[in-house]
Image 1: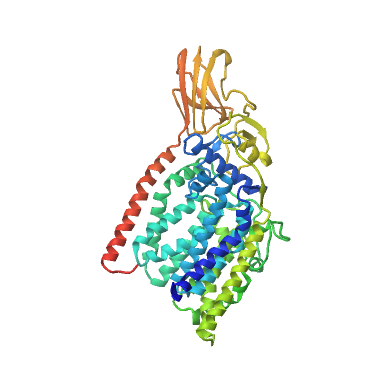
Image 2: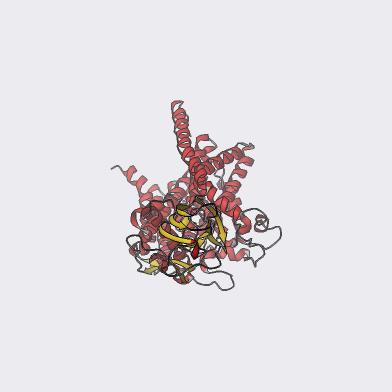
Length: 579
């Protein structure tokens, strides 16, 4: 192996090693779960979806276990549609989610490195940027707290990279759209809207710089690809939000951070604990960058005009400023946060400081330009300059990895194994604090925690009782029933008209054949008035049209988009064009 090839591998190997060290406490506890609130919620949601697929061979559309029954894939917090759900299917919930984190960390490090190189940074500068963003406090504390769908921010660098490439080679709108679809699929109420703000600012800055509308056109095409490829996830969620909108948070007390508090978040060594003088726990104010990057990004801010021409530093400054203003919250009726609260989706957001990720990304990339400006002025021979760069990279890697490892230390301590196969299903009263252990044991729990809007029945039957019964017991008899998450097959012997009560919350997207779905005291029911006396087999299934339409659209869009990308790349190579 030549000396040049060793140097080219050194930084990627350092990034990989730093990521593994950073996540080592989580990997060492791979079979264990966490006692933290959000981890309990996402473990539960993920385990239910895993069972639907592996135990029953069904797409996880309906979640019968939580809260008496609620949507699964259409829940904005669901992780089911993300590619990393395959790791859960292969390795189980506990191990699969930790392997997912490893993958997202790897993507954050690699994506930032590639983006920084694309923006003109040297390999050393790009390595520093990757370590700054990939091992920032934002990912460390949000993921350690259990905000697993916040891992979508790890894809932001790829989003910008693919968009920027599309300005020179239009086919790159395809991977840009696919990355955006992945972010949507991973769920969460914050990461997709923040990605939209990020892309809109970047495209607007490109339109101004190039004095052209092409950047906005590329953005629009990327949105079309994202909606098409991600329709299987996006359409059910959109339908759910329209049917059952989340109450807006703008009428609640909104957190306000002062400018020096947001800047302070860039340095604070926070833990998962309350923050004096702030409304939330430390993970909501997690913007920490490795300390040794401070003189680099601060210097880059001062040197933008003279030392970073053509490297998009002004746009990075604009991104950092927008992130700062959004993170400050509702400090004025004309503040960016206040204005966003008048838009759909954004009106449901409630924690302004989560926009600190935009500051983190911008400053990490500016650190690359800061290093390159310093290195250009170092009066050192090549060997000594390489030694200085290596020491700086190692120090920044150690700082970021140590902070991330410390954030994950002691997080996963709960041994809880799900049963190997299906258990007889019934509801218990339960409690939101024991929701995970109850559901892991195979029981539905009425006492639960859920931020998505719920349609709750006034009362459901608890204990090991039949899950279907006739409203009028004298009108006939339930002979048999077959239960699965999305589908129930019930055989009844009718003597006269009545209603078949299903021990589940109602939802407007259930279908019945024969019979007609109705609601009785909030409970799912089938109106049997159209059936005559005798024995009937009734199939009740959860079948939202939005899913089937989305599945067809995604099944068509994904191969078509990939074919267009490959074909356009082939044409470009044939013509000898770069892109």
